[in-house]
Length: 192
Image 1: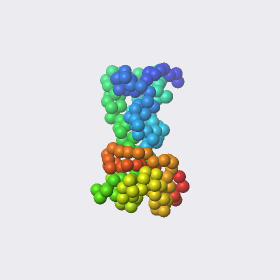
Image 2: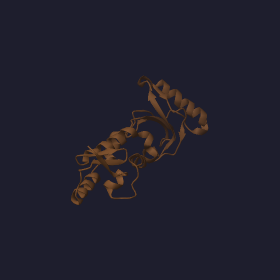
Image 3: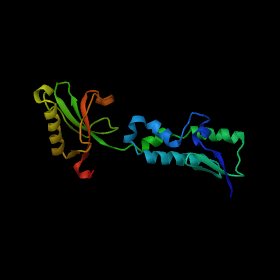
Image 4: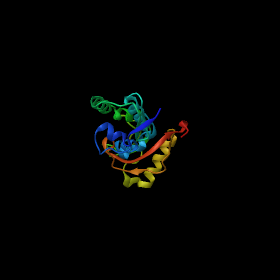
């Protein structure tokens, strides 16, 4: 069977917008600075599968191109229907399905002036593990280096290991608005 190129930019063709770029760029733009929290390859694969799933018989998505059998032609009405189907692809749902679950340790200031240590699984509203008010009564009492060293010891004793190597200083947005430091951790038995 002989094929023909329908378009070299599948997303522009399907959305009707000349502003759309390559599929990989669309996924990357949707994730922005949070790309490290997602399985980007799996998102792109599932997005491509969803696009292929709406294409008419005899049409094939290849990279960012769409090819069709020479005799596989659609009417203007069928093209509008194809664009409607594309607009119903739930990229946000695909992204959500591929969030990488990671643990983060946070040192946060409590209402009592003490600093607590929590371990969070990203996306959860409550910590997986918590030890309130034991890191230092104030940074002036212990100093920054001693506070972070103490937090590392407490985490190791609780069965966690720091895997990113260093603490990032806050403040952080959302639930972490009282967080002074954050670091990625893993359970010792997870083998990360």
